[in-house]
Amino acid sequence: MSTKKVSIGAKPTSKPAPAAADAWVESRVPAEGPEPMKRLTIDVPASLHRAIKTQCAARGTKIADEVRELLMKKYGDT
Image (tube, rainbow, N blue to C red):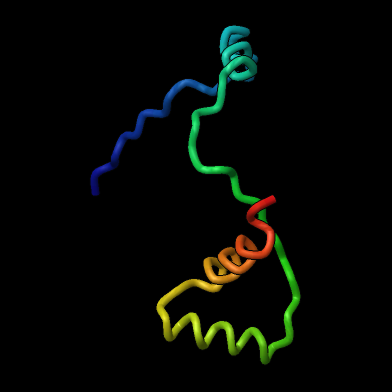
C-alpha cells in the first residue's frame, strides 16, 4: 500500500482587512439593476392555496409571479 502526501497551506491569520478595502466598501455606489426584492409571507386557506396552485400548474406559471402581478395591479402605481 502506498501513502499519499498532502501539503497543507499556511494557517489563516486573524489580521483585519486593509483600511483601503473598508473605504472602498463604504464609498462604492451600487450598480444600477433590478430593484431588490423583499419577502412577504401570508396565510391563506388550504382550499384557496390548492385552487391557486392548480391553476398556476395548468398555465405553467409560478404562484409568486401570479401574486406579484396581482399586487402590482392593485398597488403598483404608488
